[in-house]
Amino acid sequence: MTCPRQYVTRSFGITARPAAVALAIAILFALTAIAAQAQTFTVLHNFSGPDGASPEAGLTMDAAGNLYGTAAYGANQGCYSTCGTVFELKHEGSGWLLNPLYRFTGPDGANPAARVIIGPDSNLYGTTTYGGAANQGTVFKLSPPPSVCKAFLCPWTETVLHSFQGGSDGEQPQYGDLVFDRQGNIYGTTPVGGLPNCSGGCGVVYELTPSNGGWTESILYRFQGGDDGAIPFAGLILDTAGNLYGTTVVGGADGEGTVYKLTPSESGWTESVIYTFPEFGEPYGGLIFDQAGNLYGVTSQGTAPFVYELTPAGDTWTFNQLYQFVNTYFGSLAKLAMDPAGNLYGTVADGNVEVFRLTLSDGQWTQTGFNGGAGEAPYGNVILDASGNLYTTASAGGTNNDGVVFEITP
Image (cartoon, rainbow, N blue to C red; front, side):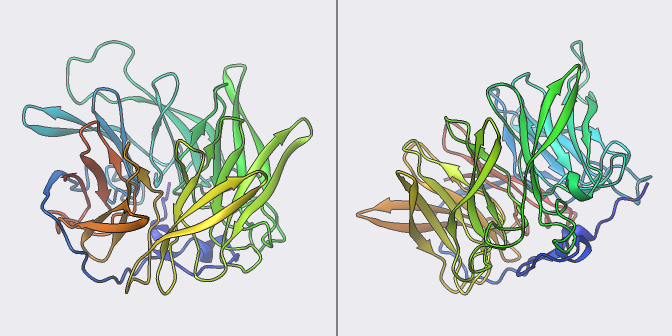
């Protein structure tokens, strides 16, 4: 089984063209130094290859404070050198210990680039970019051992819920997180696949529904590649009415990406574009809601990428640019995080780890940068614990140049 590595290089400014080109995305971040404030930066784990390499996604935290994540490469030497892992980090005394929960082999999936999430049954759920029955990626579940494991290194059991077949079925899910609704259905995106007349496919939104002990896939929407958008790299979020929201990298009225909404009805799902980016948009990252129902996101490309807000007003949405990065050409692949005070957090990269915070004061958003200098290319989102400490990953750098997991205590 071969697990292609070339997808890890990212290229901004991609258009809807064959997957082999569209998925060769390379980031060359070029930004000026962000003024740092006093903080404690701690590397929790340096990846070394056998335990994983190149953690491209952010992390998930359980109620006990344990961290879960994915490494796109590493671990399995029989799968074109690497197929990736799912790992857990647990407190052990004053430090942290990493447990590789699962090592992918290829037929069961390969190269997980998105986060794992904790499902309503407390199992972990995620996607792989490659592998599976047709080598077009998978949706998987990881379950802990059925009885208490006395050893620390206790592997979990993987179940493939769906293997993408390519084409109209969707293919090669990458960075988008999965999301559950209240009924236990799973929603996700693939950035390619869908319609054959869209230069290899413009991407799909899909649903997995539990059925007779298995899961059934339904395609909710196939992007056309025009005003409706194309190439949904990011995952989805749900509102209280069951509507889905996401972003596309390209497409829309000006070809620079969209924010879209999918509304369910008895006859199916209807897509509506709630915002089209005019120039230098390309939002690779997804969206978050605040308590008032406003949407927040960050663009990925432009003469100066920006953080934005969309405020609902009936059936329309009002766009507001909150903050524009100065002397920065590339923005972020990750969605934002928000703390209880309404501050926004995200990641950017330029050879060194960079995490930013945006704080609203007197109607203006002010940026504070955190730079630890012990990692490179943090593509994943930031998560916060109850004490306000920040956690994420860097896909490169560290002791072995295989990436790190790190914590920032502001």
